[in-house]
Length: 79
Image (cartoon, rainbow, N blue to C red; front, side, top):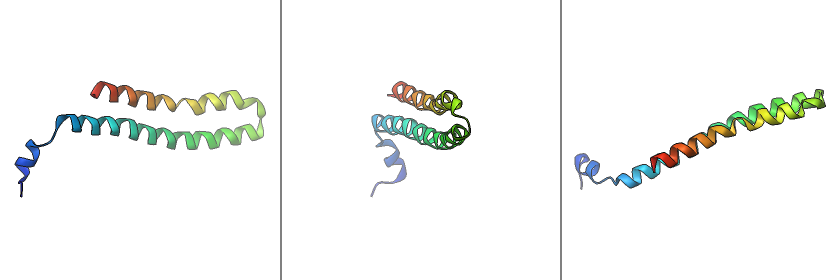
């Protein structure tokens, strides 16, 4: 059975980069989904009262998507 020091030297750097890139995209996607849930609910509530707020609600709903784009850029820089 390998000890901890041997296991640390057996880790593949390419695999660690892939894990880091996956975490960058996955966690930013999760955070964006949580943000869009709250913003979308508020936007629908505002549009129910005043239909002219559709454009503002749409733009505010799309803004958290930029977080995922930043995560994708970081993932591309890692790999």
